[in-house]
Image (cartoon, rainbow, N blue to C red; front, side, top):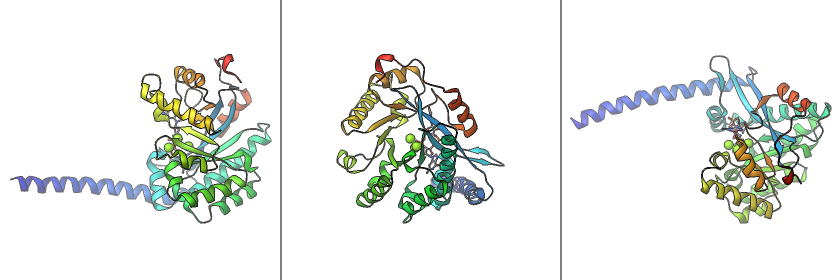
Length: 289
Ligand code: C2E
Ligand code: MG
Ligand code: MG
Ligand code: MG
């Protein structure tokens, strides 16, 4: 009896597995054609200084507009792009498009705006990463000082010496490096000081319950202190409320990014924000430095 049930279960799971595998293969297949079919677009989310209240940068976030599925979330397709290696050409497209957009904003007079681009582990491990980035910068004409590349801790510590080498080359070109989702990976303070990084991005999971969870608040405090004692800039991701903002500002966090100020937006909508000169209101003047 039990065996029979087990067998049924096996069939049940196997059918399920097949359909999710088929779904995954279909998605993968469509992803293969997405670049050629021009289905990707970029959204940009403002990063705001807590010292001046001004927009000082934007993070580039990839979107996939699939004709049948609609807008597919990066959480769903980035892992597939990563496993298949498709992230390499897609990532190059992101970099080129973001640099071109950045230059356009500069030409419109928003001259101090930096542009952040996410780099995946697979891209980072490409032998010719530095060459590719150099080519894109040359082709677009963007000053490397305006380009920020976001890396994750796990990517950096995978092969520390090699990571340091690549990061030094990028840093020496003038590119700004930041650590994304900081606090969620394996972080060793010893390594941290050896990497040529400029900014720590506090992961949004710590920011989310900041006001109600004293553990999260303690982690956020610690990251801000750590960043500042290492002379690093610190930005909080996923800021959605005035309470979170106040907390971060009181703790001396340098910048924020999140729905509270703005969701990620298409380029033309972001241009409007820049033209309006939108700033973070309710900034406590005592905290402006
Ligand atoms: P990330 O780099 O940590 O990006 C921040 C994510 O938080 C974005 O999700 C953004 O839309 C979301 N977010 C921003 N503010 C808030 C907020 O106030 N509340 C909440 N709940 N969420 C907020 P998104 O756009 O879905 O991207 C997810 C992840 O996909 C990114 O996390 C990044 O790891 C990856 N990704 C996105 N674009 C690219 C890309 O061009 N290349 C690579 N390699 N990865 C990318
Ligand atoms: Mg990021
Ligand atoms: Mg993040
Ligand atoms: Mg992330």
